[in-house]
Image (cartoon, rainbow, N blue to C red; front, side):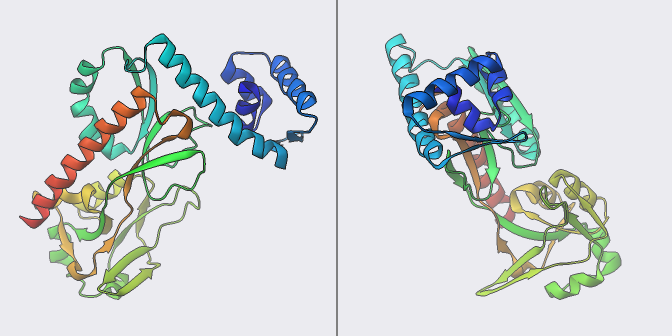
Length: 301
């Protein structure tokens, strides 16, 4: 079952064998034995990709639940259910990692000295199974059926620029006036084109495809460019709160602030009851909620 599940998750016998520490021949034998036992074919095999049959897809869900239960049973028998130990791989947005996670890590590592934490900082949406990551902090909805998400905080989209830029180029009064300004865009990780900007005033909602003078794939780079007067930027409020409070950025189009993507803590469903997953998810949620309250005080003060 473990061999079958890893092949299904990674779409490859070779990668599954590497992940399990077995030879490809052994993994292939495991799957072949399972297919003979079930008297059905679990995979469609091609030279490029391994895909599940309808029977394989149904069997996968049951196997994942069974393996999760077995892991939980092992923990209970060993008496380690309350122990937080072993390796934990997490993936978090760069800004969250630098501004919130890293400064708070001494407190977390002191509390759980037996946990080996591996942290990836990046701003793209990853495949947790493909990259063997246990938990991520992610913005936006989660549609993958094998993942579970915990909604932590909501955000809003704010349009802003450096005061010096606004003194030189003027302050837009309506979203359409942005077309006459220098704009800083965010490149999509999938299409590699700049995202549209969203605006909402009351029940009126607009989505504009605007001309951007410069675009970045990293949110932090956009904020730094805006602070240095490159142009106007649209960002979630958590990202720009400190710059706004320090006067390095100034909000424009106040009445056109739109809801942004919620921030979530996401893990694989099979790991949802793991102690190490639980404690880090609680830790990340605590950091985000504390910062949300701080940002609200900054923006209202």
